[in-house]
Image 1 (cartoon, each protein chain N blue to C red):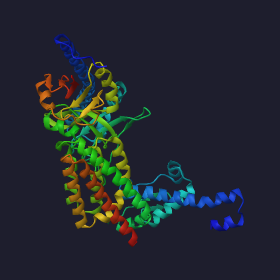
Image 2: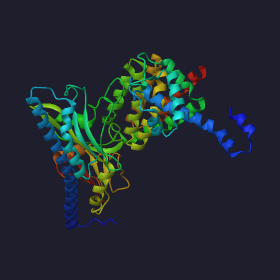
Image 3: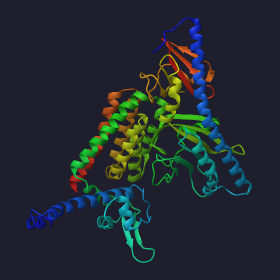
Image 4: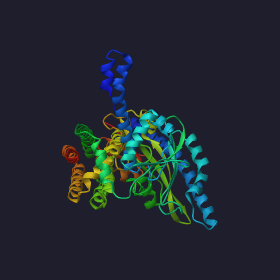
Length: 251
Length: 258
């Protein structure tokens, strides 16, 4: 559509803006879909919760109401939002009871493999650095929370619970490094990757493998083996990212 | 800047300076513990009143604590968060509850509203955190941290807490948060009064504040048994280090003497 406009008025300033508007707008729609979708998937927005009115929500997110409407339409198509008309109407969060594997796959399709690779790089950098620092800065008594998370992961039933506990382990690792900044970054990263991880953690064998990898990270941290702690944490994260990318390529 | 170690007389002078510094660090935390004790007393009184009415307390009852909590946040410069954390099962309407208020970066006072539903949040169980477990298990007040508080503030913090009991039964903890940067601002001028490099550690040897670039906040000082120093409440020498317990709070002043 925008190509036509560009050909018709190649030198016009307004047309040039028109060329770029749809691209910008598309990215904004995707950003809003990502943000709200992740929040719903992770349960930060509760099932049945009413979203603020369109103009208020658009204002809060810093997007136009047109952009917001497109994003809400996409979320309705994914089944994450329902809109009711009339009195008491509005947009409501809708989360089916069954684990939304299909919905998550739709969300995964919203990521390019390059974006997933980059997300994995960021995650490995955070968790690798955290593991190395934790090995320097902890005593066995400080590792109780990490141990609890490794064991909970080994016993967690549904994929959503596994995803949450997996993320918590990495947040706790950053806290064990005694770094508030690494912890905040890890919390933010988990809000992006957490929901997607459910897709690879549903497999019991892989869930066991991750729990084992977490246990080895804890052992290396406890032994004060800085470099192995770092390497083990990086490998754990890289393997999960590789699985997400492999799954993405089948979609 | 360090003065050379002198004969007996100087050592005595240094020793008394060290004890004075340790004692003033203790005073700073005692002021915060006084605020915790007020929250504890108000909460216990409130819960006892509800109990006399013959009903289980509910989360709405705890709203009566707010004026006191806000006052303590305003008055205590070191404190950035205060409140009462209910033992799970105490309240009739919710499984768990934090009546917790924080000062925001722009000076507002806001409640903490964490998601405590275990079906949705991986962080719903707070009973394993030191600030909850220590007072519950020992029956005594405690200093937790330094630690990264990713539940409440995302800040590197110390949390001072005390158990709240009603008719001899543990019902939760009263607590106050001190962000480590604020603690450092209070402790550093004191540490700098000492002639040698000095830092403060908790019972496990984790550095809480330091005027010594070789021992940074959050790192571990390894070797000495700081827990034993606190228990004995007496200054101890460990190689080139002098370990001075802060009176009545679980921090040890570590001074390098040579």
